[in-house]
Image (cartoon, rainbow, N blue to C red):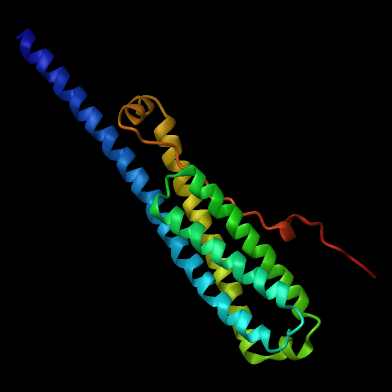
Length: 194
């Protein structure tokens, strides 16, 4: 009789361990899937930029340095995205991606600020369409990033909760990194003039 009780307790513990392990795997897969959505949107963003630069080149012949900075920032961001896509659970790759995307946003901001000085460029239908597509894509990136960060938070909470934290350590479930892309323009106070 005592052997059956011990066997029942061991079976319950094994079932409990399997349940925790499966929940951790599901959480990890959810945040990786959420990153895949960011990957799609950032790839679209990166693909739009060369077209935007080509359109601007015809009008901004004297702004070569700015155009090259946008292309260089885009290429750096593409490399960062590839590294992060290879392993979304790598915290260093996620931090680098955030820094690369922030640099690209800054370069694009300078390009759009300079384009204000070129009325023909601002009025160019192709430029307006590309700007609109880029803005739409930026909104999708923000939405996807929000969903990803929610998934990461859920996974990290699951991973750090007792007794899950014991199993997470045993089975090497590492903490996931949030993707925080700072937009400096959103931090600036709005300027009001009369």
